[in-house]
Amino acid sequence: MSSSPLVGVLALQGGFAAHEKVLQRLGARSCQVRVPADLDGLDALVMPGGESTVMTLGIEREALGDPLRAFAATGKPILGTCAGMIMLDRAHLGILDVVAERNAFGRQLHSFEADFEVDGVDGGPVHAIFIRAPWVAEYGPEVTVLAEVDGHPVAIRQDNLLALSFHPELTGEDRIHRLFLGLLPS
Ligand code: GLN
Image 1 (tube, rainbow, N blue to C red):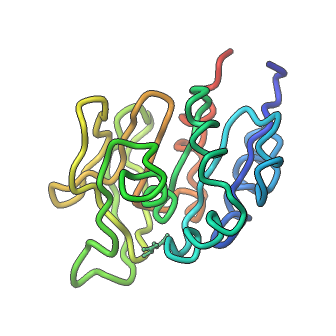
Image 2 (cartoon, rainbow, N blue to C red):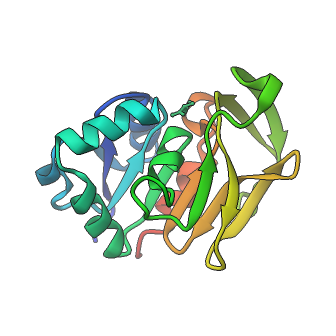
């Protein structure tokens, strides 16, 4: 692979532009994915935050479900943040062996910030923004929990799939995207 990987960002709806900025800051090339052909030639994919109900409709409209599952089956890295985590779960695309519970944080439903360690991320706690965030309510044996908040998984890994309840693309935090790009074959 070239030294500058091409990373697609699902751009049907939601916070795709902020992910593109982080990826470009780290030296990757990024492009927006709206139809199945946009997946051709990608080295990795980001599923951004947004609104999972709207994203579900967009994926159905563009017939992106099977192409996204086929992309995941190649083993190429995928990063899902917030609604992106929901889209990857058992009840949606069925790519991750997790159940993501939508809007899970009760009284902190709308937005909050927290600092915590994420396994695999060196250099101190990650500063995380949660916006109407899900948590992982159930997960299968191939899933590793990388971070928890209030005893609930908020960052997980399954093979080359990373999923987060929060938004690393909004805090100037590059380390999560570095971890993601580090999953690419060298
Ligand atoms: N609550 C949203 C949903 O259910 C996710 C919020 C987000 O992505 N920031 O899809």
